[in-house]
Amino acid sequence: MHPINKHPLVKRYIESNHFGKLLDFNFTIIQPGNGLYECEIQKKHLATPHAAHGGVLATLLDSCMGVGALSLVCSSQKVVSTLEMKISFLRAVKPGDKIIVKSTCLKRGNNILHMEASMYNQNDEVLAKSSGTFNAFPKEKAGY
Image 1 (cartoon, rainbow, N blue to C red):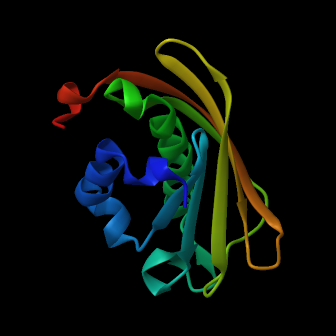
Image 2 (image 1 turned 90 degrees about the vertical axis):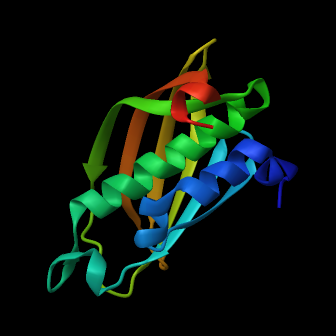
């Protein structure tokens, strides 16, 4: 586990991210700029009897890119918010699928970060791809 996972702002994010807990998301930061999210698709994640809701998948992708971006700015006492995001859903995500999402930073400016993420299942099949733009701002504005 990379030491950035123990940064006080990352720990506060874990404590305050009630939505991620509700959906049973787990994450780690591989290294600054690279997030990893995991989730097993359960009944509560489904939109139909055979497929996960796109909003759950969008949340996983957004969260992974956001944590990757956070890991790059937390040492400056900043947090991030999503400015825009694009998603391409490539395959259906089914009950019982073990989802892995990996993010990386494409470009980092002073306050703007461009991220991307890829979602895989337990068979290493690509399920979705996303890109997003994130704004870095002082932690106090977010209540930290």
